[in-house]
Image 1 (cartoon, helix red, strand yellow):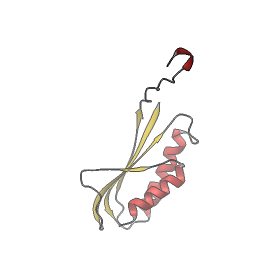
Image 2 (spheres, one colour):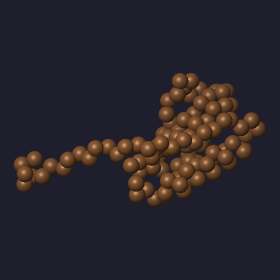
Image 3 (cartoon, helix red, strand yellow):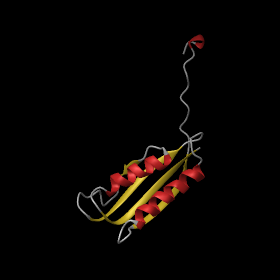
Image 4 (cartoon, one colour):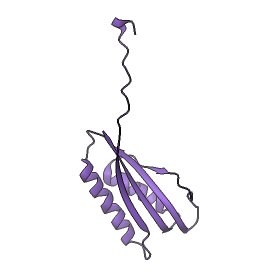
Length: 111
């Protein structure tokens, strides 16, 4: 079973904050992260906005889930400490069922 890790930040942010946090999370976890759309959308000016970044930790990944979540917490806390008015931040995990395996054709069976 895979685990979905999401980081939600809500509050005052700068123009490059979402991209910077994305890069820091990818560097710290060695995982691919992607922004997820939110109702408020991503604004192109400073202001109150919600950013949600998501990654999926799969079985057999380089880092264990616990180490990955600890690395994510470290990035988020460091990121918040660098701001005069730290935005709210939340880290969530939830299990994601593995996709159904696609049957592999077997030429001997006529597939």
